[in-house]
Length: 165
Image (cartoon, rainbow, N blue to C red; front, side, top):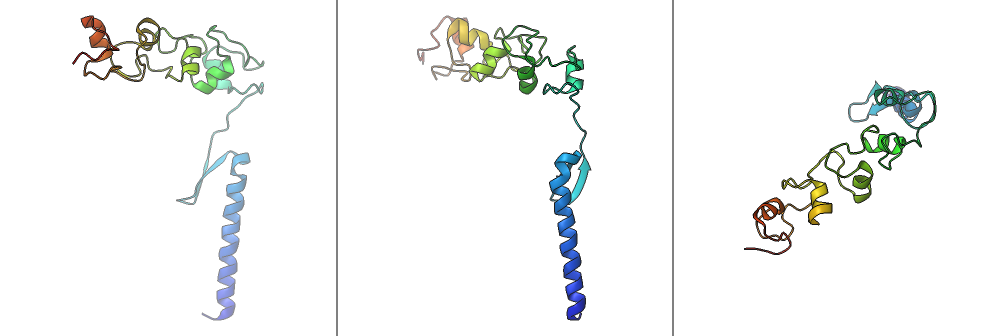
């Protein structure tokens, strides 16, 4: 291959790389996403938010909110989380306790527990029972590390804070 042809090939390759880079940069504003490993551009659905309140129309309709008015600051279930915070957390804005464990979604978000898991450590005691009733660790099935779960200790009448074995 002569120098002129090699130069033309290089220029062509640079042009292709530049075009791909421009498409990748513009992809966010065009509703596209890029898969750099496969060099493919895919159309990504655009999330509509007619009232510009930060919550998509489909989500607002799903929970009976008004997609034509800014109701992001409302708290229709009274749990302490605004509709916008419920959307961001993925919780149900019409149910104050999405996982039905006795702790409100607000309490779970503030405490850093999972509002979708009623028993974070799977020991048989709900997060509410651990936090409010017994004071045991929500994220540790065996608070005193004695081999008996907190639930077993409560059922047996032993102290989940005092190693029994």
